[in-house]
Image (cartoon, rainbow, N blue to C red; front, side, top):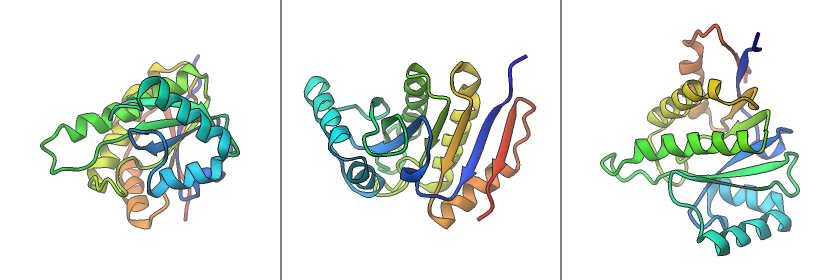
Length: 188
């Protein structure tokens, strides 16, 4: 019998978690930007930065809704999955589908590198201004609906730093009941 997959909600610094793969809320260039992307690039160091430069040269970056994998450099993970979420433009530019794709493609990449434990930030809710409630619904819905398809991923950790966003994730996850999932919410 398959063991249950785990979903965990924590309020931490994603760069300090010892997981197999950290998902970065990246921009199309993969060369670093603002917010969490800036922090991850700064803390991961030169080896990860060089891997991003090579990917940019090779592929011209990464389209919105897609994801690419690099080493994690100086972070306590093996991989960084750079998922490019959409900027919120008013909801009429396919933003929800693109955000769903960013989460889906990040999970695909995590499974490809055989990551067992993957941590996700709230993609696109910082400088890209995606509405937090809708982003959380998309993130959780996408992960829950696709997680059973991945043979290697055992646990997804939603790492939410700001209190408003954490409360949104907590409210959604508290109301979920799935016999195939173990859902744990770390108290803040």
